[in-house]
Image 1 (spheres, helix red, strand yellow):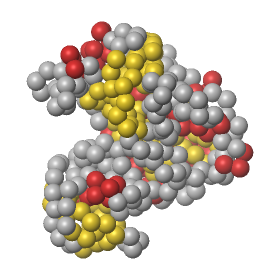
Image 2: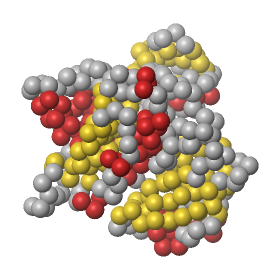
Image 3: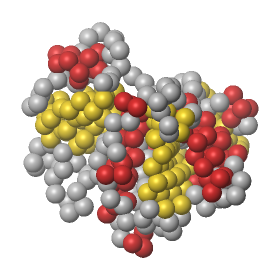
Image 4: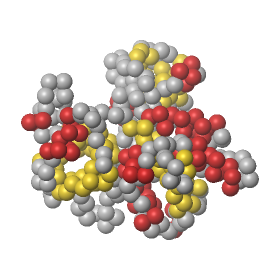
Length: 353
């Protein structure tokens, strides 16, 4: 076992073939994390002493970040005792992960390639989750095929939970927003074969993309595609917070390719503080008179315009969810404009079928 010492003085032990992230979570340390497969970049850390070994490719890091000494805790194990700069998240503790059966309550077409799903849990087995988290859906065993099975008779895919739990603790169906992946085994099942009352399993909640302390600060939300799902859950949570816990304002930028990609109206959810929603399209045709381009670029331009020409992001808290390319570009652009690194919270979607 290797001894890992964090720059804040906390320590934990890790096996030589154990991912640093897994070891830290086993020690109940609140590490930011998402995909756990080296692609989302949430668990980035910097090695200050010792050596690590690579367990899987660190696709969630850019070449510049690697050159600057960044590593991913989910993709590295300890080759010696380490001193590590591994930021820990603040905020509420994460609920325990459970594996439960569930049934499809309803299916609804939200967009030509997006399906809304509601899952019903057994009455005596409720699931606790925090808005922004995701779950692993496990398909019926009959769907599994060589190369797709998780080893226990089903295909496993991660989906963000698109709603907040009931504030009074009542049993709440889980909402998902599932994008069609051409040729995807699980995706085809959802869009062509799934029916209400079908039985499957879920494992969750997963991830640390949850709301921290945003009282009195400007809140910037960025989403692309079905990355709006956890943002919707966060907005539902914000709507229920007491006045003292509310942000100063909320700016939401949601990007798609064409108008049909923007299948939900955030302004239909009443907020106790001002919510400014800007839809952004990257492939809009001439009839579109709204914002065009990338959500992070539009957001930065708007903030700079309101500030008299220069974006001031020092006080903002940012929550970004969507494609890994958007998350990486937004992180770089916003931090270059003065956003403190610990004020950027992200859940990068990793495409799977």
